[in-house]
Structure formats: C-alpha cells, structure tokens
Image (cartoon, rainbow, N blue to C red; front, side):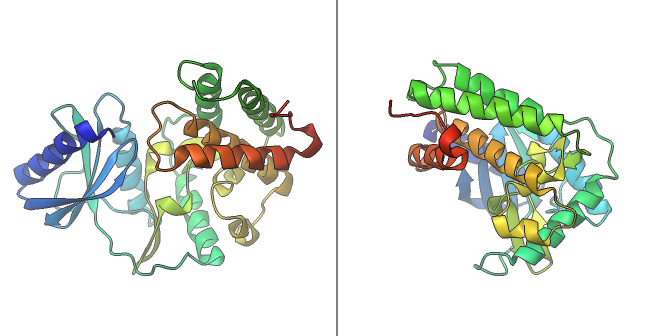
Length: 283
C-alpha cells in the first residue's frame, strides 16, 4: 500500500474498531504489501485493510468461519466483532484475533506438514466457489505479456517466464491429478506459531488444485512428512510457483521490500532448475 494511503487506512481501521466499542488509540503496522496489517491497541485486535475495489475479503471471512468450526488450524476472527467485512473511506477492513508468536524459530517440518494436512482435510469438506489454480497462473501470464505492467523485465527473461509458466501449467493439468480446495499460498509468512499450535492466515488466496501446489509454497522438507505426495508433480508445481512469484516481483506496482533483487535471484533459480533447457538470458 502506498505511503499516501497508509494514514487513511489506519484511520479507517481505528474508526471501525471504535464504532464496535473496541478501543484503538494506537495502531502498529505489522505488514504493508497489497494490504495493510495492523495491531490495534489497547484492544489488541489484528486488522487487515485493503482497498475496497481490490479485496476478496468476504470469501476469506466465510472460509475462516467454516474452517474454524470444523477445528481446522486457521486464525480466528475477532470474537468481539460481527464476522463480516467492514467498509470505511474506500477501504475494506476485517478484524481478527491477535496471536502472540510462541517461538521465533522456524516450525518443525513435521509440525508444518501435519497442520497443512489437517487444513486440507477441513477444506475437503467445504463446497465454495473459488478460482482454479490455473486462474492465478493466467494472471501471471498476462503480467508477463504486458510490457506496460512489467517495463523493467528484459525481453529474454520475459520469454523465459512466459515459457516456464505455460509449459509447467500444461504439464500439471495434463497429469489429471485429484484436486481440492487449497490455501493457495501456505508459505512460512502465512503460518503463525502460537500456543495453540500452527495456524494458517491469509485465506484470500484459496483456489482449487492438487495438494502439491500448496506444498510447493512450503519449505522443501515439509513434503517429506506429508503423505501420498507425487514427487514429479511437486517438482512441476515448485517450478510453476517460482515462476509466478518471480513474475510478481517485476510488476511495476509491486511493493515487496527488496522485490527487484529477489526477482533477479529467482530468475537465476529458474534457469538452474531448467538446466540446458533454459533460454540464454545473456545472449
């Protein structure tokens, strides 16, 4: 979120909290990307704020409620507020339970895999309309194809990303693997280590696809503790996810800190993964 929008977003979140009798004299910015994540004090509520035109928060709220009811490992909505999307001054705000981190260490791979397996089990019980993982791949493909949106992307790198996205997407779809509702981005940044165990956050990326697509976002060691993994499919999914997140880094509107350096680093990883099949980006 642009710096010029942050103050308005914070004010919107505090105003909504106050209207619900939640005292929010202060707001600490925990994360600023496409949305703003705030810790409101002294009520100690987590607020997620996004531009109203861009958000998909209704789906996230519905999924969080239904998954929590089934005992799935997800962060809970704030119990002192009505479970819905609140809109104010052009922003959509959702209110969540704030969890103190139980540890600063990385989650053990076995614990990570177990939590993700339980999440998937809960998701299999839900019937909700969500995008397919290929819809998200198409977003990346459109971004790569748009020189206006990715002006700094070198042409050879553009061709490499376009080919990798297209080829790996096609290879995954042609496998005809069983699909289900997925988290969509269960990377370590979306996993909280709490006294109640590992909890997943940020359900707005939910989509349908093979579980290997979710595992591709987790640390490599996690898949070794998840039952029934198709290793070939997982390799394809990891390459696809790497191409997708690399593409996001070249978006002219990307706000991830150090994003451009990561984009260059990940292009190198794609070339290394493809080996002799990679296009020469220096020719």
